[in-house]
Length: 305
Ligand SMILES: NC(=O)c1ccc[n+]([C@@H]2O[C@H](COP(=O)([O-])OP(=O)(O)OC[C@H]3O[C@@H](n4cnc5c(N)ncnc54)[C@H](O)[C@@H]3O)[C@@H](O)[C@H]2O)c1
Image (cartoon, rainbow, N blue to C red):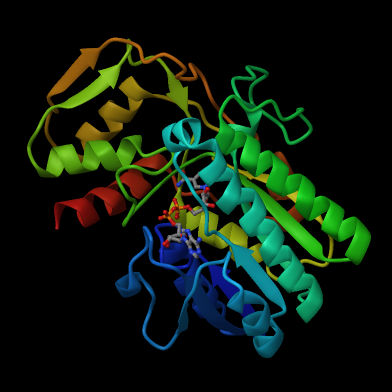
């Protein structure tokens, strides 16, 4: 059995990753979470749970005792606007917190770290579809903290031999997504629809995103566990979908028309976004991706319950 720690495993993405790891059948999974945005109920029964902040002093002893082979690091400050209002708090968790974790990993002999980075590191680069070779040019402190985190991980690999897989997620959606997190347009729409309220699109609706289902993030993570090299990989559908197209697919899933309102463009919003997943296909062999209609059907079923 491979011993795996998932930090932030009680959150939205964690709630997809942890069951997928259990399904592999060869992983002993522990979740470490301070429940600041996560929920204890999202952690499956039988998975050991440790209520702890990744910045706490107890972390080092905990890692030394448990001797994990792989650490999947999801715990983070995930809100772009919050990072702009509180750059220090963002840095404290996403950079200093990560370095504290990396030190614990080094001292306790962790073999591999899998990191959840973000498309936010690319900023508004319009060289689409974005490949991992593009220079990071974040336009938010959140994106900057993720880019810094990536650099720390790479140097830890180089200096101390810790293997890594860095995943840059596109706009993730799925069951249990919070309303405020990164890329939450689908969860915002899903809640409005469930409450029979109109949804608002800021701009003409032709702005595009790359909406990747959380179950696909979980599959990518499972494929990365035990990978013996180091890699930086986008996790995306490689498909550009406009918000107007999103509405069309949502209406098909729901079987009725939606009440859609259009508002003014929000300053700072990126117009077009799509990430290449060629490297993920080639490196980890992930060839299948959930199509938008299937992913939305699962998501809507959850939010309408
Ligand atoms: N959702 C997206 O579209 C998206 C896109 C790109 C990257 N990411 C990244 O994926 C990861 C998971 O995001 P999510 O959407 O599941 O967010 P989430 O808020 O649902 O999950 C984060 C989890 O981390 C926990 N946590 C926060 N601070 C902690 C701390 N100091 N110590 C221990 N636990 C702590 C929270 O309680 C929560 O369970 C984050 O690193 C995020 O930056 C998410």
